[in-house]
Amino acid sequence: MASVAPTRLAPGEVAIHLVAGLGSGAGDAIFGGLNDLILVVGPDGAVEYANPAAGTLLGVEAAMLVGRSIRDLLHPDDVARAFDAESRVGTPAASIGVAAPLRMRHAQVGWRWLELSSGRFGHEGSRRTVVTGRVNDDQRSHERIVGLMAAGVPVEEVADALPGLADWRLPAVPFGIAIDGRGPARHLTGHPAAVELLRAVAGDEGWLGRVVVPGEPVTGVLADLGPAARQVGRRHGLTGWVATRVRSADGAAEALVLAGTHPGASPTSIVAERVRRVGGMAWLVVEWDGQRRALDRTARTDPLTGLPNRAATVEAIAAALARPDRRPLAVLALDLDGFSRVNDRLGHAAGDQVLAETARRLDAILDPGDVLGRVGNDELLGLRRGVSSRAGAEDLAHRAIAAMEPPFVVAGTQVRCGLSVGIAVTDGREHPRPDVDDLLARAGGALSVAQGAGGGRVVVTCGPGTLDRRDLL
Image (cartoon, rainbow, N blue to C red; front, side):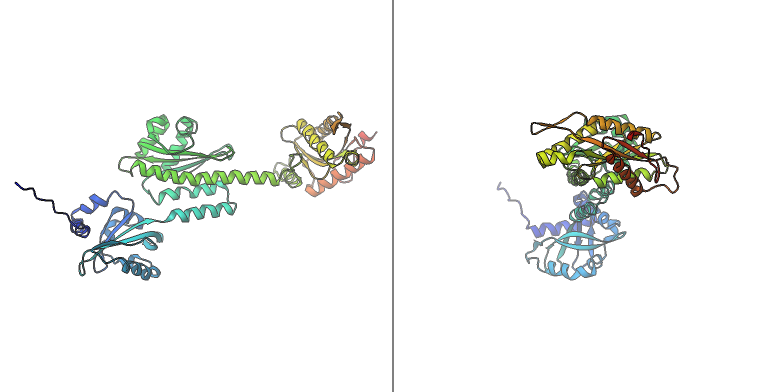
């Protein structure tokens, strides 16, 4: 018996048969699992079919879109552009057009930008248009993130915007972001279920260190993450996870992007791709924050000695004065004795070596909480805080003078530089309390007295016009 060749339908005929079955449930069977919007528009411009994702992206039940005019769903300013693009679609029985960014009506947020494409099939009088669309928020979200960073917004606030990069694409999947390295506490943000899971994971697995390493997304089941994570999963119906870790180049900060998964959610491969994209943005945030902190350190550090510069030191003094507990504190003005002779005899390169070595010697004798900065050529400024500020400041000053006693060896030559110190002390009970300028002026005046007495001295002032000249005897 002769075989009969199977009948092959043209693409347009396939589409016609498909549309004929949309109302019977074939549409959702085919398009229900897609994350992209699918609309079938009839010859009169009314929507004949909308897949579930269309309803999600436009903030309504998909059934509520059926019967509405496509013109009503488009922004008034975009209608002409949309129909002009549709009219330029080719004339065969089935053909497609090029994607264009257009705004569609959203039930909650007003208008939403989508990348829309249209394809037409059928013949004159019965022609249908299939509209497909996906959210075009990646670029907008990227621009928003970069804008926040450029404006100097704290990294925690920038991180708060990251989960939105995932939510618009996979709204049913809980995404969470954790930023580490900004202090004693991690910053967690995102969907409440994901944040709860991150908190549990951080406690059980030490920052997922044994599960997720920096690199591409890793997937697993909640059983991998410890008992606390399993409890969270049971409460929220989560069974699996996808996560990626990213780290700044200096290793000082890292971020973890985690998505919880459950039966009926988007395929794991789709979730992993979204996690990878959000992870890329999270890396941008932690890397930018690391570079910003590095630039801030550079702007506040003396390049020769590595000590805080004048601005950073004065800021530390102001912050100490502003404390509500009004703790006593002392400001020390220090100047190298004989430094100009080193420059005159051996040159400025030798002088730079002496300054750098001086910074190393003095930094080695500082106690925790002390501040020492370079504020001029051979001028240093120190801060000591605490209930025994005067005694502590005098002790620090004498140890600083003793640290300068060994000779410096520069250019094969031994040279000596001493140290003069002026100290201004406030006990916290002065009224009005002195400001930074007051204390700097007092310490500077005491330093001038110490230098006038021949150097290598410590002079203390405990208030306006008071000097303790014990060390001058």
